[in-house]
Image 1 (cartoon, rainbow, N blue to C red):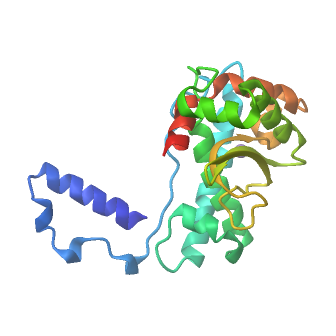
Image 2 (cartoon, rainbow, N blue to C red; image 1 turned 90 degrees about the vertical axis):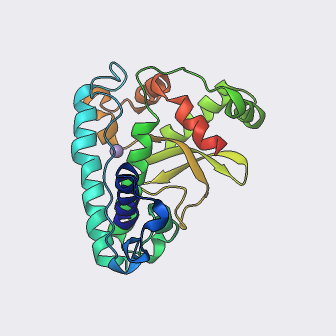
Length: 235
Ligand code: MN
């Protein structure tokens, strides 16, 4: 991971300096044998209070700077201890059952939260458009039916976990996972590419909603960044 980033930085710097890319000698290109992988949190794309009143500022700040930050830190520790050659996060998830519980929990935790932040926005459009809207209508009958089904999956996930809209071989499906598992994991009951996920761990809503998970889920529909979800669907 770091190698790739360093190579990109090097290429970017070289380009700025006017060095032709073809002149980069092979020994300066990515060398997987150094095996330095490091994952980091992307900056939140909005302020902690931006999703008020649906998600309160205190929850956002603690969720991002404490819970999610810990997943990222612990993922890096597990990677340092267990990964021998460069793997993408998706590769790690697809082989999660072959790693430790620490890896599974924190690779999932890192991926899930990085996706979660990106799919929220204070300027939500409330409904998707384009091909995703058509696909949701075709699969679930209507957008409202889709909302009901995903809300139900989120509400009935027992204990901590996530509920998902995924794409699996061109088919849209709703599923849910326990803990920090996700649908990219080899052990997932229903596998697919996550388009949208809702965190139903109590840490995601308890300060504002206490035991009222249903109300948190209902309000979450007001802050979804459908353009991000549509981009994931279209790619
Ligand atoms: Mn969380």
